[in-house]
Image (cartoon, rainbow, N blue to C red):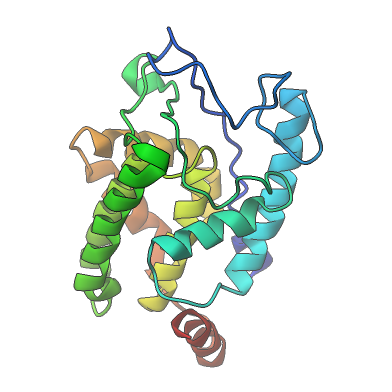
Length: 246
């Protein structure tokens, strides 16, 4: 794989749980007790410094996953393992775990309001149930295999939109889900340009927000530009596919 394609180092604005802004609980067990930043193994309290750490370590782990996917079938457990792998260096106490509190993030398309993400329910049970429905549908759809490029992008957009709306994790949802989508694309014998995804990540997010409002046209178009036939060597593709299917 060409080095410039191994990107997906999207930074993020940490989501919030502050009552009065989004109307959700002010208690957030994922924060450091004495600072308004996510609990991290560096005990870093400066948001800018923490984001620098997160960008570096998550980008490093994502590049590893692109070259060497985790083994297993595409289900919620697989998504959790991706999240755990990406954020193991920074958030080991909760990486890969289903969020147990409401979450929200300001979106300029919504004039500062947030998408209404899935309610976690008791210990994240509602999130896991909702994710199970999405992955069951993916399995029924034969993991989007044997589709032409247009049909594949349309089906992937629907899967991506539904899973993103659930927002299973406290932080890092878009990156985690896009890594899984990269692997789904690979298994379908297509290739997603992570260089394009990384460069156009603001457009991706806006497209995702629009999709939650019932308009998935921009998301389908985004994916159609990002995804093309897989032109890598047959041996490399077969090696990576075997890893995914083991």
